[in-house]
Image (cartoon, rainbow, N blue to C red; front, side, top):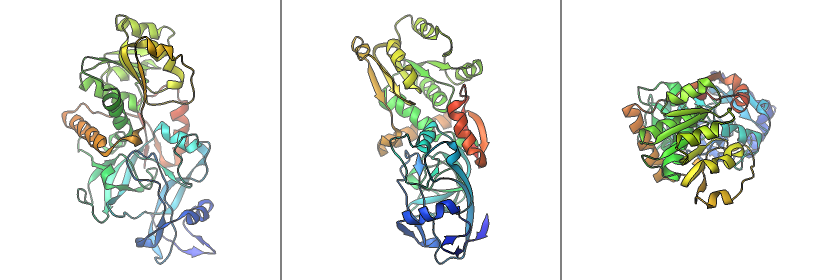
Length: 386
């Protein structure tokens, strides 16, 4: 991890040659430790991408790290492993974290492909949900110290890396009861699920919630939160193993969404009335049917979509139902603090139990992006082991 970083013939040895010139061109802010220029998009916890630029000046020796870099939008193959990037330096109210694991989220595939509404500046390193150990703290950091076990809900320099910088307000202490793998499964899944259920759907104890796609990271989080908050929980999955996973994580009933009559089964389970809330992971497939599953005043909360869908607006009128979208980056500081408090209570009392699914090494990040979109059925949270 240690090497000599030297400028030769207009490039920097130890950096990915295909990205160096682009990175130097995009640099804006001087970073004193290595006289490193750093351009970043935004450091609040919701931002699912990060872009950091490096250039050498006065220091001849520095730590180097491995990280995934994206220099162009496209297929998973654009995720390139660089083995010789400088370790970033924490700034004001930032911390440097040695990454042990990083969660992989579907939204990161949309960003990588260039189809997401919010695009990062190229090149960038993906990843927001990491767990690890604080390596160093910047000026003004009050609540964290070197050696703390932590997880994040956002990063400044990207989580698909051996080291990352994160703003202090997006870094949370990881309880001893959770290992690093589970720590990397908290950020986007649990904060999204809480925002969808509580802050957007305003779900109440005694109501019925259907988690559509309940065997993935967000789905399992939604089942656990809904059960803890007193709702009757129904969940769908695409395999028998997925259904069992849903049932073991808070759902009262599970349904196979590959069966032709599964919608009738759900309706029958509610005595024909329908459900109060639907947490929808694939709205471009399910939204039209969702509207027919709702009870009076029901709410469909859109967590995920991979394309357009045609619906009949009249389907919302008869029962005065609502369709509500969720974007985690819109959460206010107050909403984020509320969510964090609720989730820490879940960690303390034991109902928050992340389920780990497929695991990949950093050099297999492109395969992880293939699988998270194309696998036939989700089974827990996908993570990278760093």
